[in-house]
Image 1 (cartoon, rainbow, N blue to C red):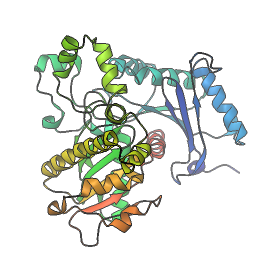
Image 2 (image 1 turned 30 degrees about the vertical axis):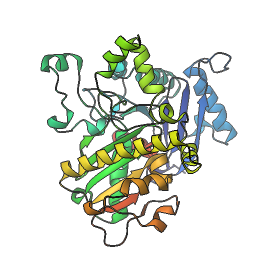
Image 3 (image 1 turned 30 degrees about the horizontal axis):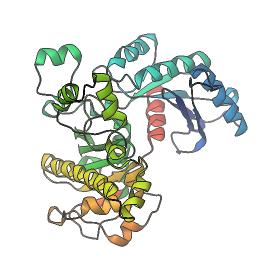
Length: 385
């Protein structure tokens, strides 16, 4: 019997510098047939020398789950690529020219795009099916010029592709659609403020399914306070640290990306541990929590102004989905803006999409799980037909 095309899975790959996450997904049903991760790629003492070896490790892990990749009627492979720069505003089938352009964009995402290129090269050598790149930045490529433009000399910005790109776009787009389904309302009718809160955090303002503002910028460092990233700081901080602390640009970049945020303020990166320390009376943890929430409120208020009000405020990703204290703290004091949460609904840690605001609230507050792998699988399937 010939297998229906709607039963054929997409292999979703997310290649990091030292890891390879994978998921075998049926786009139409959302069924996950296998998932896993290969870690410590290229690290000293690791048996996984490079991404080519990682793919063989993936095959072995799949076999252990009774999945033989050579016998799976793959529809395509969908690759998560962090930065599409000014060139890619939609998913694209990968050929040599596309791969060269992704490689060229590594200057905009030096921590992410090079690993994606290596992963794509290794996968194309071993899997003879269409390969599709799905870009984190694509959803925000249509931001209005007023939102995407930095106030720097125009010729400099044009020469070096300087603009607000935004990230986590696959998640924001998926959650915007899933929220409309939850509320039973047309996506085109909704004004949404979406908070993607995990180790990386971003906010977006979405009108009628289209993003009109987002918190991350040229790089994923801008915006909200994150696990190890500072988010917004005075741009003059770089020059100040260079003069006063004798730090190089690379050292400052590492400081703001890997040693700041919640970690820098409290000494811990895991948000669950942070909340436990807050409850135990740790002053540093309390300050980190307060700064995290203050920045969130700052962006929620700004996006309400940009949208002219909102129909729904959405929390998603690990912290957004599971941290009732964060959701309660963000909503606290926003009653005059129509935003409130019901304590019992907020404390319910159900896994599915749900409304946590009181009945009749002017702004619905919702928790909607994201699923970037499913989103990538669906975009890949739509493109290859």
